[in-house]
Length: 66
Image 1 (tube, rainbow, N blue to C red):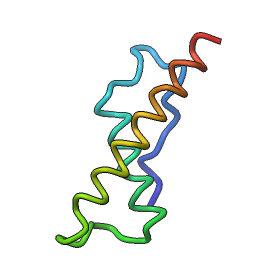
Image 2 (image 1 turned 90 degrees about the vertical axis):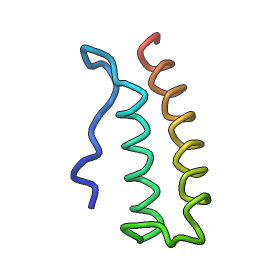
Image 3 (image 1 turned 180 degrees about the vertical axis):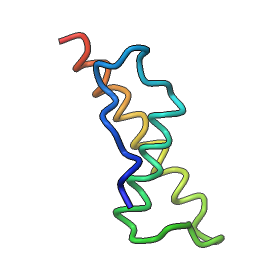
C-alpha cells in the first residue's frame, strides 16, 4: 500500500504541494486501513490529509534549511 510514498526532501526540483498532499493522503489511507474514505467520512479523511501535508511541508522546509 505504501509503494507510492517516497522521500520528498533534498530533491531537485523541490517537492511540490501536490506531491506532499498525495503522500499525506496515502499515509491517511495506510493508518486508517481503508483504500477509500466512506462517503460519510470523506471530510475527516480530507482534513487529516491537509493537516498532515501542512506538517510534512514544515518538516521538509526545516530539513532543507538545516
